[in-house]
Length: 209
Image (cartoon, rainbow, N blue to C red):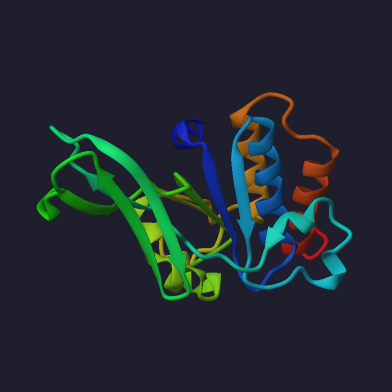
């Protein structure tokens, strides 16, 4: 809860294969975070199954994800007066042109680095292992190393891949764990749409009770 409170932009990853529990808990969490004024993105490698398309807000789920960070070029400006900064883009290169008012710029005073991640938190739902993200982990390992990962699950086979592992093997579904979590996140967050999504997860993983 402390990590969620501190976060501003959250990546939510339901497991694959996509089912009512993974998608229901993931989208419900997205809606709850939105109510708290936080940005979040739901990414599942598989499309929403046709039988679950009736669920509210499933159109927010993206099927592709690429972790990109800004490239920051730092120029030491001590004792340096800049007349102009421009850029030139061609098909095979980008030129950033810095024109000093006088003299020349020492190349040793130029440094390149990466900017901060757009996301400051990853929440995985209903996944026992990172392999259940169908390539999203393998193609974006830098993100998983850069920000905390909260792993919410109910499978006894869970590999505890998160910084925080909220794994309740006595829970019937990930949705039931997420429901309790949303209740702790704030009062009156659960509306009809969130309740419908959580119920779908509960019904799915209990085979209709």
